Length: 150
Image: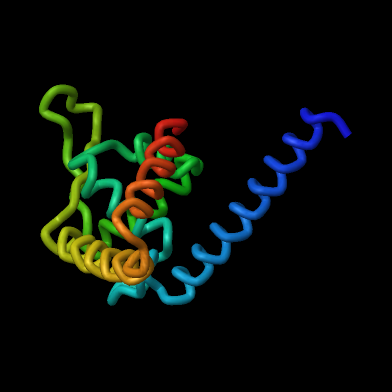
């Protein structure tokens, strides 16, 4: 077997192992309800992703959300209407262009996001507590590279 084929097979084996490990960690966290915790509003994972996205960007349009989540405009409308109904987000006309409707978090929405972030932080700290600083830095470097691809 030539060296190229051997290297290719070894890389594929490692990528498969990474995929398996990543899925195991994701499933564990999902079972623990750490990534998408239960809320008083019975929010889905997509609702939580919208809230955390709004927390990151401040305000945006429904179109921005649908692009971020990779869903249809109808799906984005249904999800945001549910968040509006629970008073977790605001919607208002842009000062620059009155045709544009922007969304932002309400104080209740900010509280929910804060709870989610605290819960996730606790989980991540627990997952990483047995790693030394070099290993944590290596993980960060890998995730920065992966994130750069998106």
